[in-house]
Image 1 (cartoon, helix red, strand yellow):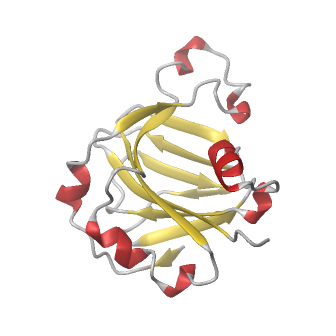
Image 2 (spheres, rainbow, N blue to C red):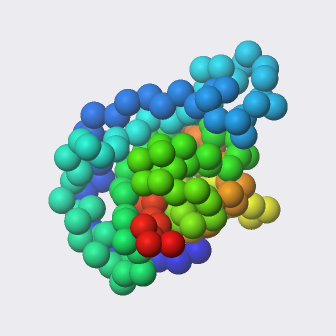
Length: 169
């Protein structure tokens, strides 16, 4: 896990107008999660462009870790207690369609933890479970890397996702 110093106001993040993103049976990676119990818990709530992003986002996307990318797309997620995103790989359907990306291995994803982890907040990247993150920790992966997120606690979980790629590849 890597780290940046938090420059955000968590109260501003909590007050955003999130929309539930239902992913049950909309992402092919979830096809084997066929049980009806998953129907209302697979997903999270998102705050994406074109909605106006909080001002700290402009500063974050100018960090040197993003210098190598032509396109940097931020989003913020809230995962309420009981929501899960079981182990999956992102299909990047909108990215592929909007930016004419053919190979998802050209796409990189950064996940920033916006608060210290709370009991029951779990993240998995490939074979590694992340359970004790601090605000400012982040992980990154490329394309089809399997990952998961779980809120089995009693408090909302907040993360910032930044998707990056080069248009010229």
